[in-house]
Length: 308
Image 1 (cartoon, rainbow, N blue to C red):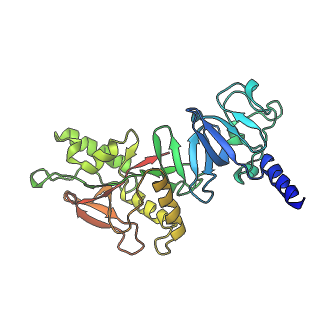
Image 2 (cartoon, one colour; image 1 turned 30 degrees about the horizontal axis):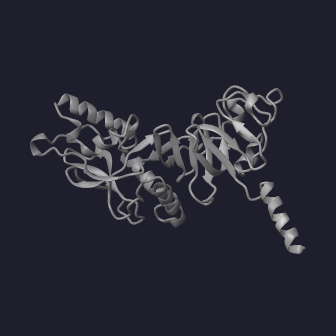
Image 3 (cartoon, rainbow, N blue to C red; image 1 turned 45 degrees about the horizontal axis):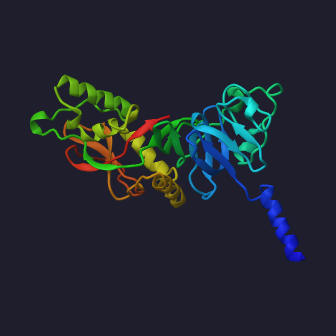
């Protein structure tokens, strides 16, 4: 009898959702078993149910059809409220617990009726990120590697990397490209573009830049200060006190999305040049020196970044 009661208890718990998880159904029919963390008018942040200690993923709301919660409630996105199984909002697709604190804890609650709690961006923008989060919005996808102070914006890093020279120009064509900005790689990308146009060159003469540019609009080779911050964040925020867990989480997000882990033994190119012959680079290791100038024709690692 005790065994039967125990079995009934377990079945009741499962039916009641004690061991259940949120289910995200994407517009293409793909289902994701997840723990939903935050939902804003633009994005849904979640962890995979099978890896609760892994990276946080970000989906644009436009790619979500519905979310089914363990208690049976369903939130629909981009559909009329008549099809919802729980009272909810109409208009812009948003699904979130009424209290941000409950949502941040990963628990789902039903939305309040629209007439008593209208949905506004001011009330429901919960887009905060952490280094190592997975970011995906349309075709822009990568690992969050740097953040603004409010943690709403920052940089994402490409999942792949490649060995390339900064430039292939030899002695006769060597001259500074004007890519001397230390804080914004987009400025250096524009400088290289002007240099190409003014001197009858091509992007193929600047392989590191060409590779980043080929990824699509908004991708660029980071400036040296951006790259230094990325490498510091990769180590937990400080070079002198390396955080293995942060590195593990960061690399897990890269590998789980078809990418390659960061290399701690090889230099990464920045878009910042020192002079006509050399460009600045850095590495992810905690040991100094952190910045070196190397010949532009040498082949070192390249990663692209994109602002969000």
